[in-house]
Length: 390
Ligand SMILES: Nc1nc2c(c(=O)[nH]1)N[C@H]1C(S)=C(S)[C@@H](COP(=O)(O)O)O[C@H]1N2
Ligand SMILES: [Mo]
Image (cartoon, rainbow, N blue to C red; front, side, top):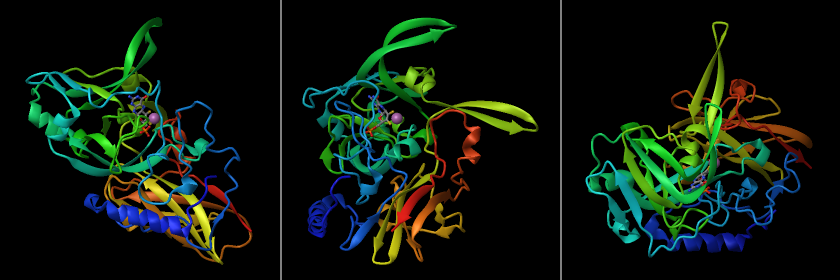
């Protein structure tokens, strides 16, 4: 485990944040451990959890260490399928091609000139799961240009039905066509339909995270962020946007990021094969702490931006009890931090679990209820944790 913040460091941190007042960062309601506050150990975390394989550029967030609404750039979870390209931001140009009034090659400063927006967005890799103690998730404040503003500015033709976002990273793929393999070189790419619905959450081309330029691992100098969608949508090292009429069928859009569901309907099994897009509502207990005899359960919720109805906690299969949402993470697409005061915790091992519900009635399912989902992605099941009270 990493070293915890001392109280002095917490004070320093909040002063540093006050210095960023222009960004209007809200007060941190949930600081790191306060004085006399102790971490209660989880018994479900492997000893070597979070240890990065040497040379690996994949990084997990140790969720026990969450110490505020925004994940630090050096802790932010990191995933990609190929190498991390190194792109010079001065010579960088974004190509916009296809069904536009004029193809464009835009520099970062030209993009900035189109107006700057900021949005809080938390997301997870659709492969995030109990196996990695839900460490493929983070939350950030993103700065960039609104995709809609860019499209309005350059003029998109009315036939355009799909915007395809290409990264600068690419790899060899084997594409199957009727049992026959074709070897091709393909960049990482994802698409968004040109519908109001896909643009409703305010997707942006981001160049900064928490007020600082993106790091190489986060996709510098420019990436797509689609608030409320799974991580795979957020194309890093963006190099080109292509507007087209046809559906885009690249590997990462149409083949690799899919989910197979089996539904029983009137004694029949109906199969669904769907793409990974909006985040399914999930809550996770991240840590339990103790100050003398008081215990607190702390965690986060990820969702698609639909307002939350409740976050509840159950101890040892007992009744669901309301947790409190933290004010600092009330923006629609932010992850939501929550806490729950656990009174009367007795010595020994306990199982605790959380459940989130939104106002549209989406309830985080149990693992049993989610068993209809046959493939591993989009695992948003309730995640029971075990703690040992000493
Ligand atoms: N160019 C590019 N963008 C990419 C990927 C990639 O392999 N290449 N991986 C995607 C996946 S699967 C995830 S989960 C997120 C992770 O974003 P992060 O590393 O900023 O957390 O990036 C997405 N964007
Ligand atoms: Mo991912």
